[in-house]
Each structure stands twice: as structure tokens, then as C-alpha cells.
Image 1 (tube, rainbow, N blue to C red):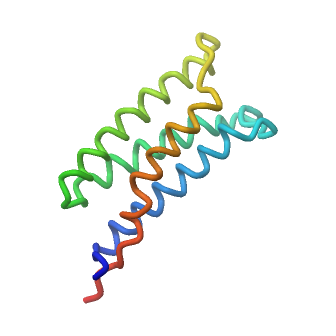
Image 2: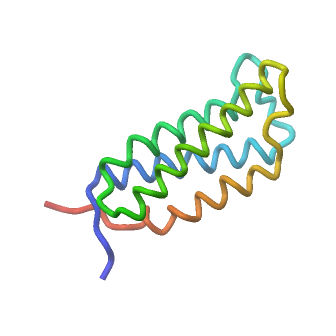
Amino acid sequence: MTETMTPILKWQYEQLLKEMLLLQSHLTDQDCPCETESEMCVRKHLLIIEAYAQETIPLEKDEAFQTKLQQLALEAKQKRNVEERKLRGEDEGLAEDDSEWVRGWRKEFEFRSLAEPQVK
């Protein structure tokens, strides 16, 4: 039997995974002009990942996933701080191998996002 979840929780996980995929792409695509026109793509996606993780915690009933979401939010903030130091010229910033960090987290939540939404 497939696990079910509320439609909003499923939506939250889908948004979180989309942002992770975009961040992973920006970290590995050396041709992306991420810092042109004030886009700051890596920082933007880290902010969104942090926000979706924080927003999803109270919706998630499974304590193990609540803990994972808390850890993801914390790590995303730490990575964002590194990226912000880079943008200020104070640090090297994130590297391509940071894509493995985001890939690992994406794998933690992919199966969870496959749960069927509850139908009332």
C-alpha cells in the first residue's frame, strides 16, 4: 500500500525537490552566468531551499522527516552564508562538489515526495 500525505505536504516536497534540482544544475553547469544581472542563482536557490524546509517542518507528521528538514534548513543556511561571503569578495564560495551535498539531500526526500495525496 502506498503511503498518503496531505496535498499541501506533497506540494511542499515537490517545490523543495525542484529547487534542489535547480541548485544542483547551477553548481555543475560552468556555462551558467549565475552572477550576471544580479541573479545570484546559487544564493537564491539556497534561500528557497532553506525556506521550504522550514515551512514544511510543521506540516510533516513523521518525526524523522521533521529532523531531516531541520538539518537541511540549517545546512542550506550555512551554505548560503558561504555563498554570500563569496558575493562580497570574502570567500571562494561553493564549488561544483557541493552539488553532491544537494544531491544527497534530494535523494533523502525523493521517495517521500512520491506518496499519494489524500483524497477526501
